Image (cartoon, rainbow over all chains, first blue to last red; front, side, top):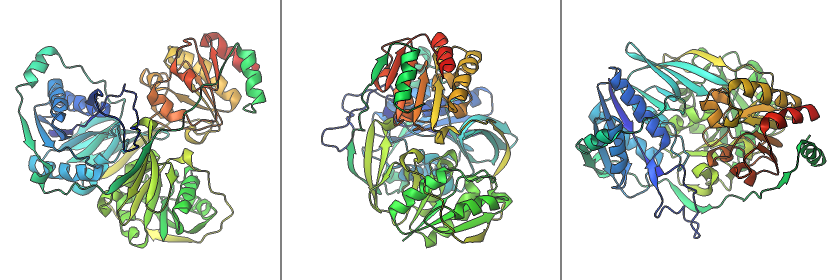
Length: 248
Length: 309
């Protein structure tokens, strides 16, 4: 089984985001960037499939600026085989990302595309599902467990109320949730090895996809600030405060 | 203009998230129809017909949509969109699974998890775990929107809309439902609860989580939530996770026990009306959003609080 894993370079999850004073976006200058945490989980899962002998090749793809190459290298150091960087400095919306990925799928013919369920920057949670629609492939979103079952995949999903298991014909799209695995840290020898792994460089134009945005930003603002309240001495004070506030 | 709302339900009962999406759809403008797709969900369709302001309910009944899997829902909804300017779907796991599939087929960019409708093209939505609010305008001919329930009031129930039936799409589809394991609970549902008690990593074990958090929640008639750390450690089921990528809640009262308050957790609960934090670390970030903070050892403070209620 060949596995394609798209990864996104995003603001590091520990960074406190600051809105730009001119309200055009958030400040990304000199901010630490990392692989989207959900994508680390999908890379890990693909590498585990390869180690278990279910996956034959793990191809990493990223759409983004030149520096997204570092994100691909990180995934290669975790165990990916080779990379494809689709280089653009434009903001590419999920629909356009899905269209480019559909073309990559046509070139690469993977049996499985494993994606993070959402990116922690725009929180859209769309790309995997859109790609599935464009390809007319089945989808297993928010995966908690993935098992190969002959030619099919059994995917247990995190849903409201509990867990749901679905069976997908392959080729298929799976998006991963937090509990699927705990991503490894790449070892130093593997980081060195990853430097020699090939990364193809492309541009959105090579795939003939129009990436012009459908959405325009009117403004980006700070959320309303919630003021810290008061510290209470003890449980009895807490109860009386809650009573007078009408909360209990 | 006309808007289609996709109902959230479990074939037996209509989920309140639907009422909230109807409110958002009414703000968008035009006629609001509700699609109930399920199997044996006649009672759900009847409940949907009572939602105030609904023009009609479309009830699609069949095995292919029993679990509202995305492939079958796409086949059902995409042809219906000829008659609508927008589809509004709750940002539940059903909605998040289904909506982008519809959007891609219609060749439009979806608007995810909106918290306000400014006009028929402009919407507000949180990004970066709610650390920034994006006002965004869509130039697409049709809008595909998922709606954050906590941002809208539930529509009333004084309507009496007609119920039309529609054909459920014929399968087979490339995905099939196998089984589900649902957490059974008599407590209120987390996403819509008026009170929530959440536990964090400081509880130390599932036994302590059950011994301390559950009785307090029972006393308060509250739903039980958890931080990601507590869920990852196995103290609580994944469905309990409150935060950026879990449940978004905005109850009247949120009690955070042994939760430090990572930004990803705050993203899921900071719109709660009153926040109580109990934590022994007085520097914990949760205190920066708490109305009432109690710096104490939770193992003694929580039983004391439970007894005092």
